[in-house]
Image 1 (tube, helix red, strand yellow):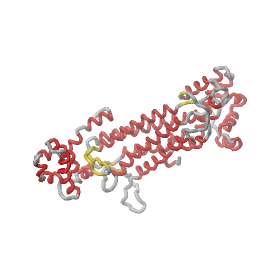
Image 2: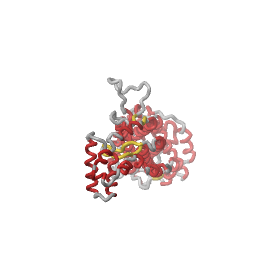
Image 3: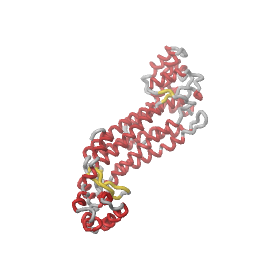
Image 4: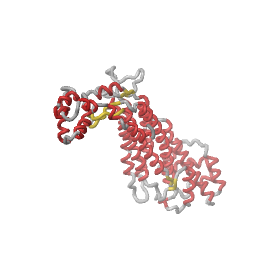
Length: 435
């Protein structure tokens, strides 16, 4: 991923030096286990750690060897032997390349998950703060983009909070599923390496042994992991699109923070554009797009092929780095979001009281009017107001079919905005555990 959309902590997980360090740890822990069960000398296992644990691997040297061997793991093992010396003959005993590659990828994805979960926690904190800040700030709810009935801006934030609670739970589950270790040798039969070695390495790396690894860890695990990232990205986009709509000039109920010296357009000095949330929409598309090849990786030939390898070398870093950046960016947007309650109230009033039409409809049915007639009475008074021809409450009071059932006082009571917020505390308790 390009530096523009990258953050250092996540990038570090995918750097070659990190990868080779994990490869070494896998090999060294395997040697420890082999020594414990008497396959190799304990002095040799100790020497392997001593001679290479503090090494900075020469990435250029490994690349140079790989240009000859055409095999990355062999190139690494050759370079490793340059540090270890004669005891290097015990390294990679009974193992195959996928034991190293797949176990390393599990470690990297597990570490990436930890960062992403922390990112979501930061976002949840920002959403909770803004939700309670605007818990009772009235605004118009929209369906099909059209004014429906009143809600509060706090409820919009609470909805996002509940959604990202689910995202967090999915990431935790994805982390659990991806964190498996395979040290089972060629075609996964343990013919040349004892299963106790796998168990030992798994414990040391905080992983679980893969029950049946063939020669690779089954890719349904990875498909689930990257699909989860795609779902999280979609939730990011949903919130981003909501903010983009609220920032439109005709709406302007909320907008991204516009910093001192910021420019919105090279041509029009007046512009304040929702560039961050538009950026998030684009980044979400990228992360979502990486879930499809991960699913296509599930169907490998027999016990293994490497059609998945090139895919994962790209989507592993790119998906996690991009999602990490996007979550952090959305947290910043929410944290600094400019909210305009006065504009919300103005928009609420824009349709002359039509947002209370359902209350009038239901009140008429309670007075004995059929639902069909009630709907007709309310709608015939609503449509002129929709066209800008009068005030809804005034027209209802003049309608004999309506006024014959509902007094002026009863009608006025039906236009109480507070009616629509009476269960906000209930919803907040469900989302946050407090109101």
